[in-house]
Amino acid sequence: MAISQQTVDLSFRYPKFNLLRKWIRAVILAENLIPGEITVIYCSDEYLLSVNKSFLGRDYYTDVITFNYAEGNTISGDIFISIERIRENSDEYEVDFFDELDRVIIHGILHLVGYNDDNDDDSKIMRGKEDFYLNMRLQ
Image (cartoon, rainbow, N blue to C red; front, side, top):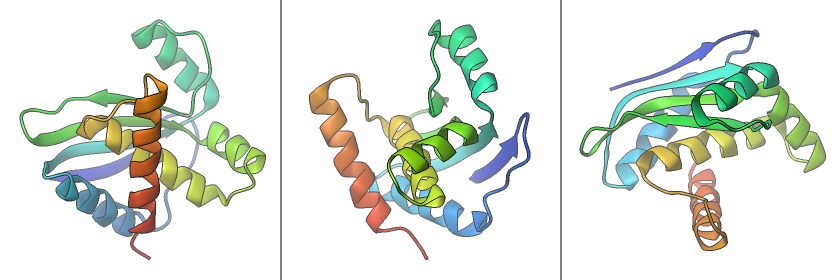
């Protein structure tokens, strides 16, 4: 198992990444799955927009895009996160930057373990899971 972080076109590092890594692992295990290779990739709005256009055929800004490489019960994938979008959202929703970042990271992890938010019912389930796992964050 390896959970790592990278940046593409900006400078950002999650300051307590070891705690984040343990939390991600705990979430995956709580879903009765096995953590595999997971990379959290921080980037700009423009970079994530280009990923959205190139790989998903969508021409709009988003905060997170997840690429799932799971095999069986082993969860692996890449989670691309726009740091600019996280900053905007944290201001708009009046929440701490790292609280918003954690929500988006766990949202990506939930996609990797099999949850979707394609409709209202699925979105409610995902939001409930986000809240549940945010409450079990390691401090």
